[in-house]
Image (cartoon, rainbow, N blue to C red; front, side):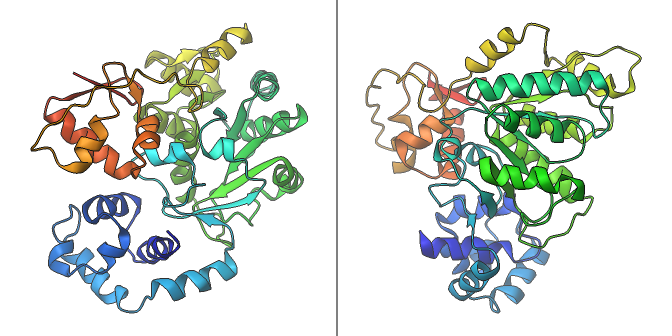
Length: 372
């Protein structure tokens, strides 16, 4: 595993190789070490590896030495996870583009990274109304007091209010940054950042000293959505980054809840759009919201399905056989399949797709699967 970490790092340093291509490499070769040692002809068999990408790989791979690179990188970035690390957030492994490197600062809580403590994202505009601030504080406080961890992006406005309220209520919060984990942006949140380090976690896919750049913040929103079992949008104009987070949440099979607003309020236009697209409204009785969020299964509270009968198909490849052996006639969540098989998320995802195409497995809403 320690060796494989170096290859995740090395591949991420090659220009043009992003999270999606890394997933395909791991899926195709089994390990990134095997991919690193593959010939250009073998790499060309992976979708997305055209001539220009292959040229970059050939040119840059010869100059990089994964083990040495890992040692050097850890001097500046002592705390980071790769998808092969057991502490890597389990729910992020479900998304199509998990960060190859996830840097962290603060107090790590394994129940959060393993998906046992429910994480709920709260996002919204940088210029909220008094109405948006009031409800953000109420909801963050209620979540914190009921055992949820609040996830947001440390931006001005709704993000700041959600982090601060969760901490004030004695709960935990996670801030996902669009900068390095050691770069505080906006600077006015320096004190809040320090508080999060003592009672929560700061995460980023960018290495230390990475300054803020516009393109980095929409990308980090996929991490906010991927970490969380639900996303709450408090106030959001039509071009708000919060809508990007909500779109990622829909793509990843997460629940989206929206604070309704008046039709003539600018900060509510994005929320009204989400409501028209099927998002659930946040109503005055917070007990109902907490009940709905509490109904989202966490990994340790999912009832174990009856022991599935072994379905032996002689022509089935071993990895497909291993996956179908843990699936029964009752739906099983994707992260539970990973946990029960002990296989990488990318391998499980590929196996499930093949089993679906073969007519052996049926996908249900919310990334759940059952035998046909």
